[in-house]
Each structure stands twice: as C-alpha cells, then as structure tokens.
Image (tube, rainbow, N blue to C red; front, side, top):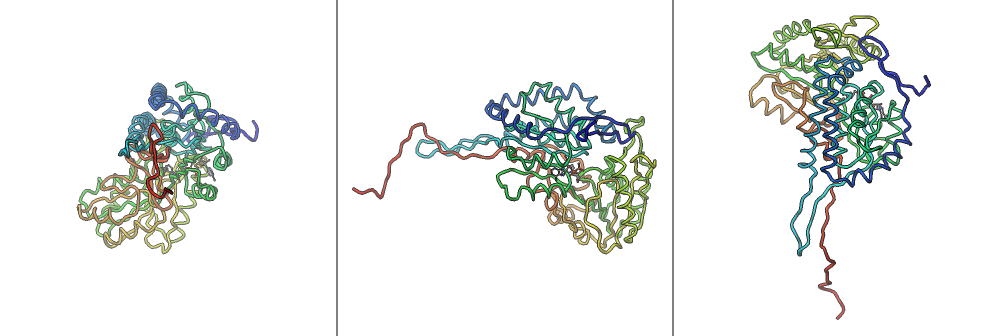
Length: 470
Ligand code: NAD
C-alpha cells in the first residue's frame, strides 16, 4: 500500500471493502482531450445507442450494484435497489431532455437563407460525486453530458470509490471508446486538480456547500468553464392544520430519516403551528421510536442503516449536544447503538428557544422542531436560512398552500408530500447556498451543451444597398 492508496470500508461492519490507487489527473485529462473530437462528431443517434447499451449493462448487474451501494454507503438494500433503477431510467429521461431542452431548430428564413439554432458540447467535463447517492447523482451528470457529445472524467467521492468503479466498468463493458468516460480515484486533492486543470471545460459538482463555494471561488477568474453546483440544504417541513396526524408523522419521518438523514433534500427543520404541536409530536415520537435501525442487508429490512462512518457519527453526536447546550430540548435522543459502529437512532430536538439557531446542514438523522403561532410565522421560519433546496407544507387549504408556494424560497416546494424523493423528470436544484441556478435532473441538458445561433445561405450573395460613392 502506498500513500496514494484509497481504501473504502463497509460502515455496517467496519471491514475493508475496496482499495485502489489515486488517479493521475494529467494523464486522464490528456486521454479525454484525445477522445473528445471523435465522440463529439458522432451522430447523436449513435451516442444515444451507446448510453442505452450502458443501461443494459447496469440492468444485467443490477443486483450486484445494489448490494455494493449498500455495502459501501450503509443504506438499506431496498433503497439501493431504487438507486439502481434511477440509474437505468436516467438514460431515457436524458434522451427526452436533450431533445426538449437542447435540440435543433430551424428558425425563420431571411432572404432565402436559414436561421438555425443548434447546440454544441463543451468538451471535457469533470463530474465530482457525493457519497450519499454514489451512482445515481454522478450518473445524472454523466449521461446528459455524454449524450450532448462531451467526454467525462468522473471522480467519485473518496467514501464511495467502489460504486464509482462499478459504474465506469459498465461503460467499459458497453464498449465506450477509450477516454470517453474515465474514472479518477481520489479525494478533494484530485477534485481540486481537475477543477483547476486547463484541459477541463466544465465542472459538474454534487456535494456540500463548502466544497461548492471553494470550487466557485477557484473558478472566479475563469468564466469560460461551465460550473453546475448541486449543494446541500437546511430544508423546512411545515405542519399546519390537518386531522391526519398519522399521515403527517409518516411524511415527516420519510422526509427527515430516510437514508439516515443523508439526503440533500432531507427535512432538517420541522416547523409546527402551535395548535398542532402536542398531538403531532406524540404521533411523531411513537413512529420514530418504532423505526428499525440495523443491518442494511438484514432481514427484515431496516428503515435506516448506519451513517457513512464513525467520524460522521461522532460529529453528529457533537452537533446534537451543541444544540442541547444552546437551549434545545431533546424529544428523542440521537444515540450511538454500538460504540464502534456508526448506527444512530434518530434524534428530534425542540430548538424553538435557541435565539440564534445555527443555519448549517446537519447531514444525518437529526430533526429540529420549531414551534410558531401561525402559518405566516411558519413561512418566515421556513425562509430563515441561507439555503433553498426543498420545502414541504403538510395540511392546510389550497389557499394556504398557494401562500406557502408564493412566499417560500426553494427550488422544490411540495404539498402533503415529503421534502425528498424528487423525480428525475423534473428539474432538480435550489437557490441560495443550495445551488448556482443550474438545476440538474431534467434540466441537466442545459449545462451540458451551449447554444449556437447561425444564419446560413448556400452561396455568398450580398450587395451594399446605401452609402456607396457613385
Ligand atoms: P463533499 O462536498 O464532501 O464532496 C463531494 C465531492 O467533491 C467529492 O468527490 C469530494 O472529493 C469533492 N471535493 C471536496 N472538496 C473539493 C474541492 N475543494 N474541490 C474539488 N472537489 C472537492 O460532499 P459529500 O459529503 O460527499 O456529500 C454530501 C453533501 O452533498 C451534502 O452536503 C449533501 O446535501 C450534498 N448533496 C447535494 C445534492 C444535490 O443534488 N443538491 C445531492 C446529494 C448530496
């Protein structure tokens, strides 16, 4: 083993899962540049055919990839299966998105000429992935980028290299030409090297706001590179009047604790109008205490597996304690189930009385509860954040929802649905610290190609109509 060896561990068992050497960024970028012209020049139909072949390879390996996702991230197998489905479905969705968002158009003709709108690929795109959806989210950049004619350098998270390698193996089996999709193993250093490399034309990033801001800063003097930043959230779920307490509690639990709270769209703040507080908290505690936390490959399947590693579990424990110290009142405790493994019971804490609640993303199963007098105060509280990814309203009338929708600042606003579980057929992105106005999912097509406007005539025909010396 060298100091350039990256090892990933199974969070549920602590056992080594995978090891590999850090990638050579310069060599990978050179190979990408060599591959780009031929790939970009292929007919669109051929590139579509190639990504369909990739989907078939993923389909053939679906069970193995789902199990690998579970082993590397700790998310229960039922969730990993849905992630693999999303990887496969991304292909057809992206083909449609390319046609709808970035297709070709013939515009009005001027003097027998043609005005045309076509799109071109940027070139070599660095895709930097997070660990929580180690296949689906990078794939959500990779597939649209390839369809548009770009080549891709994919650096998976240092916490999920095995899944990254498995994904790139499917491209190899689908017989993608050399250099079109490359795996670059490594951590933030390799990420930074890719971002700064002059041979890279774009950075498609999914991860934390801190890393996204660092990337943005690095490229501030380089506006020529396209940068899509999909970042985190401090997402509110607001509950106003509803008699359906059991359903409301289920929506809150799904929003806050699916994937052990390791989703960018997870609800972090439950804002409850006063009249609902006591009855709703009772239901919520009952349901939360009945959630199974355990072996992500176990039978019966748990609701939650571990968080990604012991260090993360430790930091989440410290964050929960800091909220208690600042005046928060625990409702259910965030508890380590085993001292040496990162399994956590979901923590719910009332932070209404904390005067300055920290506006940070606590990426794990921690839900803060804030009590407010009415819906207007709830909307103000929902907006009390620099982030703006997702927000949900539970209960209320159509008029209440219209008010919520109009006044809440977020890229995803739902009614009587969880804050998470977004569809790939819609745009996916946030405002504020959650993104840079380049939403992914259906709109990923927009940042994978640039529009070129052309006026065209088959022969050069022109004359100067005015202003000539006689
Ligand atoms: P992270 O920011 O630590 O890392 C993401 C990727 O960026 C990794 O590949 C990492 O190696 C790389 N990286 C880190 N610092 C970098 C730098 N300075 N320059 C270049 N590359 C760098 O994120 P994570 O912990 O892996 O993932 C969890 C985070 O991702 C959460 O904040 C979550 O909300 C966010 N997320 C956002 C979305 C979305 O679509 N908006 C989806 C999933 C996760």
